Structure formats: C-alpha cells, structure tokens
Amino acid sequence: MQVKEKEGTMKRLALIAGLLVLMVAGLAQAKTTVEFWHAMSGSRLKVLEKIVSDFNAAHPDVEVRAVFTGTYEETLTRFIAGYRTGTAPHLVQVYEVGTQTMIDSGAIIPVYQIPEMLGETWDWAQYVRPIVLYYSVDGDLWPYPFSSSTFMLYYNKDHLRQAGLDPNKPPTTWAEVEEYGEQLIQAGVVTNVLSFGWPDCIFEQELALHNYLYADNENGRADLSTRVTWPDAFSVKLFETWTRLSQKGIFLYGGPEYDANAAFTAGKISMLLQSTSSLDGILKTALGKFEVGTSFLPRFADEPSGNSVIGGSSLWVRKGQSEAELRAVWEFLKYLSQTDVAIYWHKGTGYFPTTNAALKQLMDEGWFVESPNHLTAFLQILSGRQDTAAALGARLGPFPEIRDYIRTAIEKACAGTLSPEEALAEAAAKANRALEEYRSLIK
Image 1 (cartoon, rainbow, N blue to C red):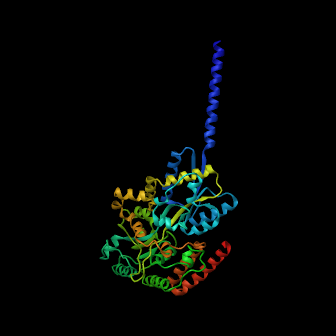
Image 2: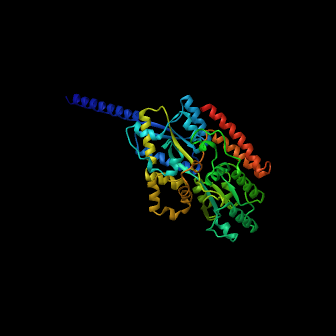
C-alpha cells in the first residue's frame, strides 16, 4: 500500500513538474521581441545599452534587441532596403536629414497615431516645443523625439587667457571670431584657431540662425522643394567670411562630422563649432588638460535673427507590426519618456532632455549650475524664433546628398579652387538636380 501511495505521489510530482515546464515555456513564448536598429557608438553606445538593459529587466514580457547598424546614413539606407525585403526592424533611429525620406517612405506609423491605435491617450505637449515643431507634419509628431541636439561654439578658456582675452567673453559674432583669431595667432597660442564639425550642417545652421530659407516651398515644409535658395547675398557673404578666415589661417577645414574634435581636444585649435552630442566626450577628453567653455553659434550682427536648427536623430516605428509588437514598442518609447531615463540620457551624452519634466528636474537639482555647458545649446534653441520655416530648418528628401555638395563647396572655396559664389553655384546646380529627381519619384 505504501509503495502504491509513493508511486502515486511521484506521478503527481512529475505531473506538476511537467505543468511547470509547460508554463515556463509558455511564458518564454509570450515574450515579445523588439528589434531596434541604431547608429550610436563610443560613449553614447554604453549609455544606450544601459537604458535598453534596464528596460528589459523591468519588462520581463518584452525584449528590446538594440543592434548597431553603422553610421546614420548606413542605418537609413539599410532600413529602407530592409522594409522592401521584409527584414526591417520594429524601431529605427534616423538622423534629422532623413526625416523627409521617412515621411515619404510609406514604411512607418506616425507616433502620434499609436496611442489611439492601442486605446490609450498621450500628452504630446510634454516634449520640448522646438523639437516637436521640427519633427511635426501639419501639427502632428511623426517620429519619437529622442537624441535631439544642435550646434554650439566650444572654446578653450586657457587659450583665451594666454592671448590676454577674457575667458568668460567668447566671440558672439563672426567679426569677433576674426578679431579673437588674429590675437590668438599673434600671441603664438595656436597656428590655427577655428574648425567645424559637420561643416555642411554649420551652413544650414547659419542660414536658419539668420532666418534665411535653405530651399523653396517654405524649406520643403509646405510642399516638396524644387530648388535651393542659394547662392544669394547672405550665403555668398558667409562663404566669403569663411574663405577669408581660411586665408588668414584662422579657419582650418577639419574634415566631416567629428573629425575636427581631435584637434580641439589636443589643444591644436582654440574653437570648434560642433554638435552638443559631442559635449560629454569633449569634456572627458579635455579634463585635466584645459578648461572648456561653450557659447552660442557666432552670427552676423547686421542680419535678422532666426534660430539654430534641431539636429541629432529620432526614432521611427515600422508599419506592419502585430498589435503585441506595437504595444511592446510603445512601452519602450514611454519608458524613454520617463523623467529619470531622459535625464540619464542627457547627462550621459549631451543630447537635450526631450521632456519639459526632465528639464524642470535638472534645473531644480542644480545640474545646470554644476555643468553650465549642458545648458548652452538648450538656451540657444529656446531663445530663438519658432514661428518661421526658415528658423525651423529645411526638410528635404535628398538632404544627405545635398550636404555632400555643400561640404565640397566649402572645401573648394577655402582652398581657392573656386570663388565662394562659384563654389555655391556648382553645389546648387547639383542640389537642384537631386531635388528634381526626388520629386519626380515621389509625386
């Protein structure tokens, strides 16, 4: 009798164990996977990986798989190709100049539609207004605002001191950049003074900063652009200024994107126009070498005022997902909107805090007093105009291609290969052909 009872008990235990195995297997199968393609590398990658890891730990039913897919341009190209072949991710990070391409792709769900699709409501007014305005179509937000930035002036305070300049009064105009540059060179502090990160972007920034359109049809915001607005009097003056500074040795063309950062952090130049996304990397590299200051982008005193343009990137949701996948993506985007997460991303990268709540908490805790360099570019976008298409920046389909043409034009003008006006005219002819080709494909 005891043997039979024991056998019965063992059978019941085996049955329970089997049921537990099935339950665990069922839970594992119920986990929803979100593939997320991004272009973050270096120190930014570590911050992003920590955010994704923390989200996954807090959401056992969801697994976000963050996959580095190369540069911004490579990631955008790969996504478009992947959508056509059915291999695109659920979520993708795209730089700001890919915005119009994503809108026209037919491959995405605008984020403003997602809450209603899932039976929820969401307050889009919680996000910082200039960022929302940049990424909105007819007042509705299309991508999720995540890694937003703009450009600002970085400068070496120690160099200014050595040249007898006030380290707390950086140049605010191009005329002052020239004056400071001459004094720094004459004092023997540096051989070259200023370089640009993303030279093509600085051209865009300067047009927007002075409230000049980059392209027709309200910078491509009213309709697809057909032509760029340059060369015109302002753009020629800008190129002439940069060419003159180059001839004096003040301006040093430092290459594309982040190439010029090394010259600045090594103390070979005194000033750098670069994205806020480089801030934390620059501060860490310069620590113990020299004191870094930041200020607004230089402008022309006799020109109208606009605003610096939102840069960086945003997150786009692929069309054609299951409801479970879409819910998982939405949970991740809501997680990124949490105040502590937005603050962690800002402090770890230099990108803007994208929510008003995060901005308020940073101010309340004294973060911007402790690290005023993190406030500079943010004040710049908040203090500028937000009511013109010129100040908001352009939205063009072949924007990455047009940027290449502008970068080449800057190189040729500064090298003396072409005059400033000739270099701009050559770039404009190529840009207009690209706009025409893109429009013929879309319309």
